[in-house]
Image (cartoon, rainbow, N blue to C red; front, top):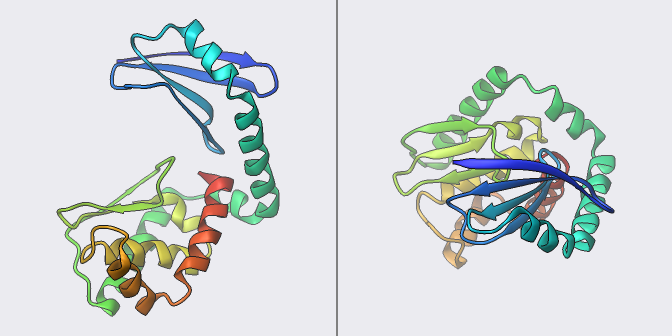
Length: 189
């Protein structure tokens, strides 16, 4: 069960405070898609949460600035994400993942495509792949990088040297693409 309240904080504007029984600690997130959100443990009062969040206004302002710079640097990406046809995106992503898996010798069990706010993709221990529908708005080389990254997790669960070595065989410039993906994530996630 959750309760929420929106309050304006000086210097950053509206902030959503969401009380959650699952939260163990107060956390603050700033995202292009959801704005500023403070998750509040059930036992913490809204006033205490507001005071704690007020102490993070500098960080919030800095992060909002980074998001705004990323959005200005990638206007086509922002527009593509806003105009995304989810059904068409799902078809394209499913087809591309199947192609990349077959081409590179990977076998996954199921594919889930969701509108996620923090992740581009994930691979479960049951070899199920989850992809963010917003991948369809990315340039093809970045979307392929994410899909290959998740497919490599079928063989290597963590991000150790063996993982990066295998990913490097399919995507030689993986680290550069990862940095570009982080910038795109600031703009549309």
